[in-house]
Length: 233
Image (cartoon, rainbow, N blue to C red; front, side, top):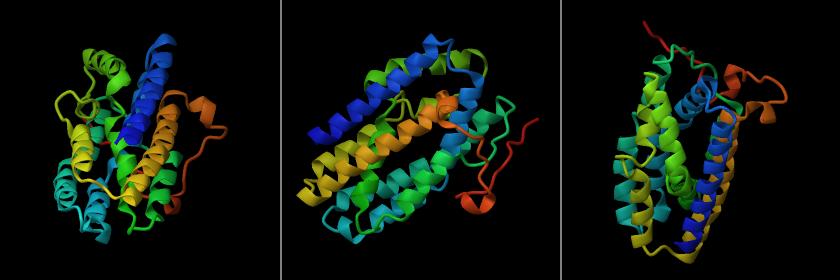
């Protein structure tokens, strides 16, 4: 798993650099945090269906332990999109429409052959572990800052390797599985793709002016999910 861990470490280092630049420029803004929660809500909504699909793929037949893990993992991840909604509600923010890069992410993975599930799992390995390693200290610093302001931080905390170690779990079960060469190559390729796509989404959260040449509100037919508002008292 050396290549997979290398890709993950590079992604963590770049993630840490993006957060560091935001902190040095005056801190991660409320707007940036709201964009992050909006992005993560749409990214993780119905995520369990994608893990069930990977678990049910014929390519998983030689790997019953991975299949079992994915079903459990899917059930654990299923409610997390609601945590992002609740954290947004603590800010009194409106969720808004699905960000363009999230729609592109979902569109890309929907067209991937379901017979090649390790591409998708490679991306998952990076996304679920990107808050660890070099980025961990910076992530916890930002979480502490928003918690001190009375804002909800459950989503970020659960994905920061503080208590839930689900990112470690998926890598460990893959390491024990003795993947075939082709499946491992798919895993690494998917990790590289996932790292690039996720870091683009983080850059949109922290530095939207560098990506948004135009203000883009996707029409409902182009979104994975219709726009919603966060209801709060």
